Image 1 (cartoon, rainbow, N blue to C red):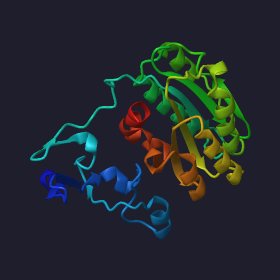
Image 2 (spheres, rainbow, N blue to C red):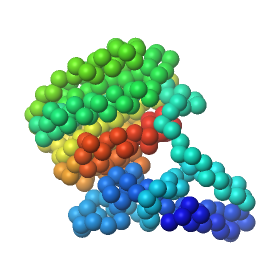
Image 3 (cartoon, rainbow, N blue to C red):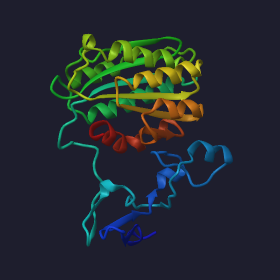
Length: 274
């Protein structure tokens, strides 16, 4: 598909021009789900990745994304892809990472997950007037590695990320979600009342208590408008997939930990601009 085919202009009933974006990133078709889904694949894959959006995939174009277009009533201009940062209005979020370290993840994948969190942190300005972070790791039990008000510099944050231990065990996602709501996102542990809360959940499969996980996910959204789920692998439960995140646009679905880097730019846009 050529760049010129990406946008169809038509005259709306109200008399203004509207633009229909017709091209989606190739990554979506081969496994990355950013709130849209796949066009083909097995029936089970279509059930998992299907969305109410019809898309066409391009090898190189990113013209489907509104971030890459500026429109007027007469022209459409293609812009370079938006970088993940720096962000013009800053990114003064309270960000809590929830990292799955259950036995099904394995030590190597767990370390890749930590490495991806490092990549996110590298995009941020860390400090009391900027972004602050906390980290919860979970398997049989959920435990805070640090609270929002404990680490005030990027240097110390990166150092702490290099020493998070891998535990192994079963997957009690519900405990992690409850811990974030009742402990991490409280004023006692650094939650700032005027800063937006963002929770990022990494998981690779079913939790051991699905109903309570869904219940705790609903409860978590009472303290955080932006809950992002990064779903890795093929073992996720569909009900949990839909319940964990704020909405379908807050779901990233990747086939392996090796694919995490491919979602960094889109993820940062949600973290800092949502």
